[in-house]
Length: 163
Image 1 (tube, rainbow, N blue to C red):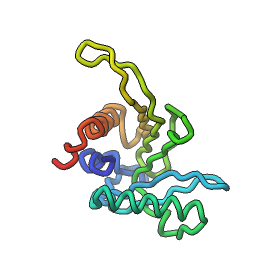
Image 2: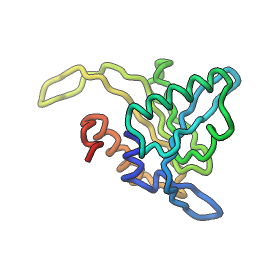
Image 3: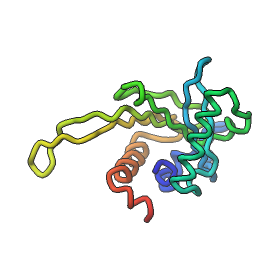
C-alpha cells in the first residue's frame, strides 16, 4: 500500500541533497525495527515492484535477521522512505523523526475500537492513527495530506491498489 502510494506521490519518495530536492526513482521502504541495542532500519528495495506476499516474506526475514544480529550493511542501505510501527506496544499515536536525507517517515499506531458515525448511526470500527513527519524543505503539509489521503483510501478499499 505504501509503495503504491509513494509511486503516486513521488515527492514523498524524495530526498534533500546539496540544497536541492532529488526525486528517487527506486522506492526502497525502510522498516524501523527495535533491537536490544537500539533501532535498525532494514530496507525492502524496489517495494513498488513486489507483490504483497513477497513484501510480507521480506519484512519477516529482515525483522528476524535484525533481531538475530544477522543483517548485512546492504540490508540497511538506500532507504528512500521509512515506516515506524509502535502499535504492537499499544501506542495509538506518536511522531517519528525523519531519517535524513529522506523526505518523510510514517508512524503507525495500534488498532483500537472507536465509535464513529456511519450513515447517521454510531458504529464501532477498528481504527488506527497514521502520523506523517516530513522535511518541509521537500514536502509541505498539503502534499503530505494528499499522500495520507491516498494511503487511507487504499486501507479502506484495498482493491484500489490494483488500479
